[in-house]
Image (cartoon, rainbow, N blue to C red; front, side, top):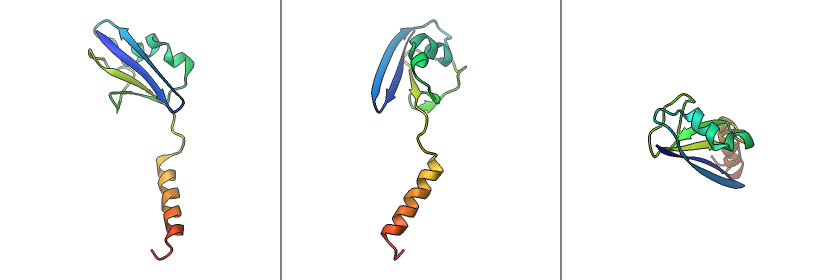
Length: 91
């Protein structure tokens, strides 16, 4: 079965098309791509949905190596709210 492993970060993009045996897992695809060795990945997704390492792949799946978050989402929301409050003191 064919699957694609993608690393798409702001500064680079790499994609590897792999032919894996039926029953291959996310971890096996990531290792076979060689992209994990070059880059620290915070999580892995299949078609944009976070996946477990032991999840079995299906033909045509796109495995995405996700970069670590630069900022905690809650902290980002607090900063946006504080910035908006400063910009509009009437609120």
